[in-house]
Length: 188
Image 1 (tube, rainbow, N blue to C red):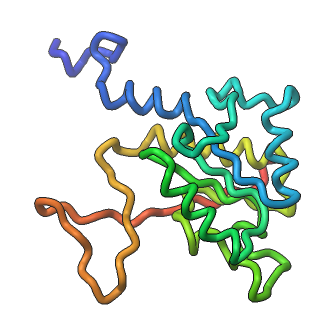
Image 2 (image 1 turned 90 degrees about the vertical axis):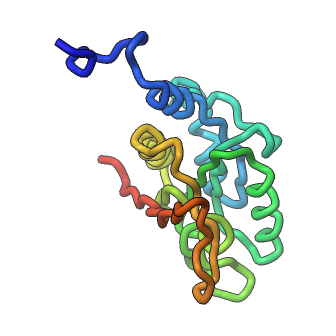
Image 3 (image 1 turned 180 degrees about the horizontal axis):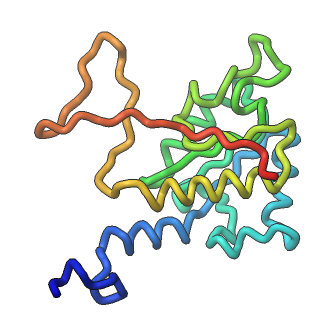
């Protein structure tokens, strides 16, 4: 019987699994509530839904202390540079949840003043649909993000925006992998 036949425990577990577990259970959100979806986001932190059981009990006011941005509501063209600045100030690894149809696609505001999808400004990991999405939908999106963190690789880097005519940057033969955002549906 070799070591590969042993079940993993705290002595024989992989360091990568430990780091993934720690990251998944200590995601600290930076709030970016812009409209009515922000009310639903606030209710997730209240006693009825209590995201503190997921290790997210404190919404951070400083982007330097947060690693998850929940964009809740419509993003105007004037707010887009501020959103990007907050995202750039967040520590790595960082994740983004787009909450509601206004943040995801512009919603009913199909005009020049509203950004038609926050993914034009920051890369989005999970989309939470609804107008506004219920707190259960946001919890489902958070749990989907947790699963994505659990199954991801530590060494995987976030793909940077590269113009289509330029070759992707390489680092000793490494080519960045494309990101695949998850779209979640309303839980039953």
